Length: 198
Image (cartoon, rainbow, N blue to C red; front, side, top):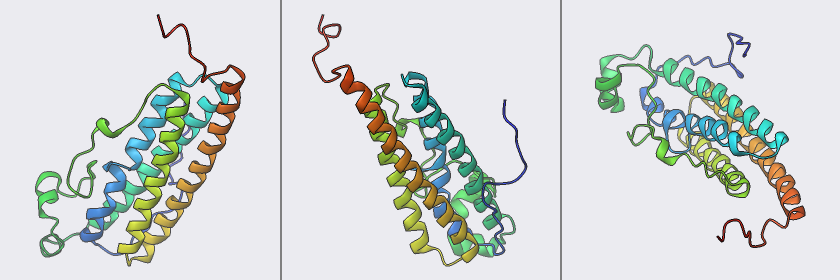
């Protein structure tokens, strides 16, 4: 089904321990606009997508988002794997540490654990593709915010790569929406549908 190569999409090689940085980067693992939600959103939306090329787009991007989830997990792990008790306390990382030690757990920077409640799947072509475009922009803004707060070049190189991929995904979803609207216009999609009015 999948061929798994034991390498990340983009290399993650963090030299310095920094639990303070890990505290907010983890939001892209399990936060409201993170990679876990994105991957599950797209892979779930594909089932009701009526057009094969857009179903393929959702599958491809959803699968790529799983690779991004792995990269964020690697960043968080490498930032926390050699922490001392002093570093944990200084970074304010003790609440996370008590519950998860240095395990990578899907949570937002605010401490809220990941929830499917923020993952939008409507089953409507226009609604889902617009949601996907918005989701990619929200992820891009989160990466922008991480870059504003991070001073670690090893981290920033990976974050810039991920940010660029969010922009590409936004563009692909925009193209997909335009194709879907062309197909829907042919069917007079916005006319009243008697099947729904019974």
